[in-house]
Structures are given as C-alpha cells and as structure tokens.
View 1 (cartoon, one colour):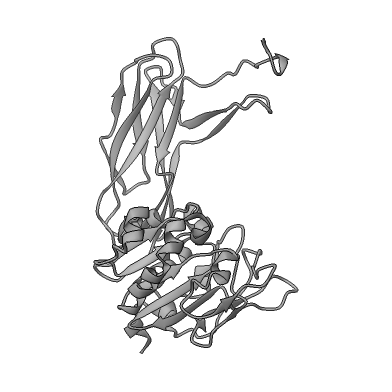
View 2: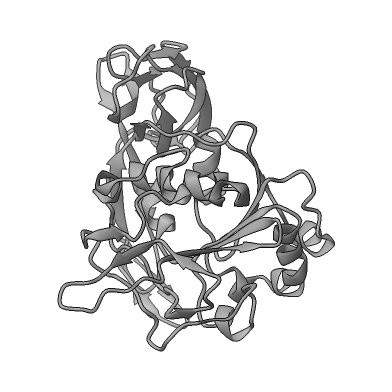
Length: 359
C-alpha cells in the first residue's frame, strides 16, 4: 500500500512467482526439411528466488533431434539476475514435415522443474498480474525451396517478422535503414521486400520510390506488402492502382482461395502452391487488397468472405522493364509468427520470382 500525490492511496498486491523464469528465443522457427545444418537457440533464465538455489538448464528436443550442450550449470548470483545460454540444435537426417517443440527447463538439485516464462504486467490503470507461458520454441518443419543464392534487401515498415522468416528458410537478407534506402544502395540484391505500411511510416521510402522502381526496371524483383490508402493515392506503384473505401479484405482465415491460373510461375516455382498451403492460416486471409489495377497487372488469387462477392486484389504482379513488381495484401505478417507452412512457401515464391520466369 502507498500514497501517490496524483492518484491518492493505492495498493500493490503481493505476487507469488516461481524460483526461475525461463524463455526461449526465437519462439517460432521455420526449418526446411532439406536443411540439416545446426542452429543456435538462446535460452534466457531469470532467478526470482532470494535464497540461493542449485540448478541446471537444459533444452529438451524430440527424439532424433540433438542438442548441445546437454545441460549447463546455473550458479546462483542474486535475485533478479538474468543469464543467456546458447544451445546448438541439429535436426535428424530426414525430419518429417510438421510441428516440433523445443522446451527449456531449469532443474533444481531437489528435482523441481521450471519450464515457464514469467512476465509481470504492471501498469497504473490495471491491477498487477503474473502471466506465464511455456518456455518453448515452436519449430515448423516444412518442404520449402528458394532460388539458390538469393539475396534480399528488406525495408521494414511498421514492423513485421518477414526478414527473419526469410532467413530461416535460407535467404540471405539485409535490412536496409533510411540512409541505404535514400542512397538507392540496392546493388547486389535480387529482390527488395517492402514491409507492411512502409509508405505510411517511412518518409525515406516515399522519397526513394523512383529508385525502388528503377531497381525493378534494371531487372530486380520488388515485393510490396500491404499498405494503406497512402499507397494508391501517392502513385507509388509502377502503373495505376486504386483501393476502395473500405478497402477489400477477407477476414475469414479459412475462406476458400482459388488460383486464377494454377500454372502461373509465381504459384509453381520453386514451390508448387496448392489448397493445402492455405490451410491453418490465422486471423484473416489479408487486408488492404487492391480494388482496381492497370491491365499490365495480373491477379493470381480469388477469395471471399462468406456471403460476399469474390475479390482478386490480394496478390497481383506486373513486369516492369527487365524486372518484376508484386503487390500483396495477404497477411504474411500474421502467419509467420504462427508458423504457417504455406505462407513461407508462397512468400518464398514471390521473392524468388524473376521476370524471365514469366516468359
């Protein structure tokens, strides 16, 4: 209990927490079935007990997966002390597609297990509370390919997990800050990916749009993820596009997706996209679809919410000079954190695409 000059008397409840909080980073990973290389996984453990506790830390994996080191001692420091431990994880020779989990556990000398992450929620307008979650990484093992040697420049917008998603499936990704964007420093990249709402949040991208289009004209591939009304209003696409108000979207994550041309190169190479790739999506199919586009654009997909008219502006592409330009309102930014295999496979196709594949 205490007194605040602005709020008056207040009470802070006593919170009971476990002796250790354990967290795994990253919490979601995509792992191509053909990729047998080991990866590093970081476990962060925080001591909550004011009394010295003898403990060790391990990262548990399914049968066939190997983890090194097997166990790490946790010498007691003090209450609130945090420590990061890196484990190396190696998959079996031929892992089956699906979801596996890596679980971190702090084990005391008395045999008690601590395998949850503990976070304290503490804001002035709500009561203090403890939130716990399993200390694990969800690993999606999937058949996915990218064009060999692919190098991508990624320009973040309001923030998404696309750059890390591409790294996890084998793409060499460089995230470009304002100086590199304004300088047009795109040489050496096969593709540029623009993150969600980039034209709303990045003035440098607005200023450099002509250079981005020039990159496509010289033979590069540009993939633009969902943007709001600034995008069509600013004329940032290479050809005229429009977005009605409200913008077309599909909120039913299980809505049927129909390919308009199942043999289109962006849907067949290097991964053949089928109905199975649209299973397991979360929250929605996408948002801020285009409503109209120049005839030089080609739509690839058709979908609709129940009872609504089908829309086709979720994924469109157009040749630009010697290169390729793609706009997509599909909600990849929601699917990557959820480990949705089909989202990785389709996104891999978009960044791997080249205009010569269309001929």
